[in-house]
Image (cartoon, rainbow, N blue to C red; front, side, top):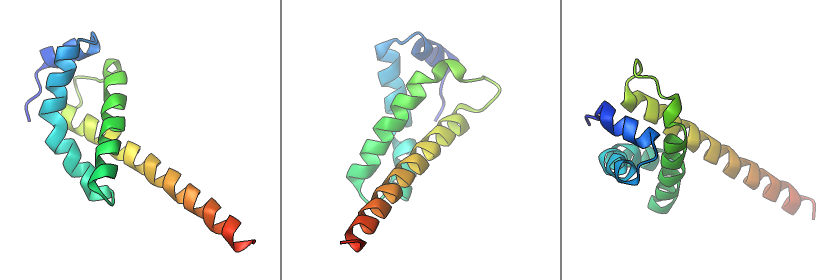
Length: 101
């Protein structure tokens, strides 16, 4: 995966074509990360879309001295951790409420 700085700059300017091109370039890489940490393809797809939106919204914070691939991986893993915590918290509430009845 070779992401050109011009593509990143265009994404920072919120150019839709550039964002779509970036999505196509990173989809397989990010999906492989998501599938590794989720239970189903649907959950992985949802996490990927959430993570990619977060990547696009934070493109202006990207620093060129950090490899882009490592930067997007970190964001995606953090999104997956957040999703895991939400699910865990939801299950715990469900478990507690069913145990008190």
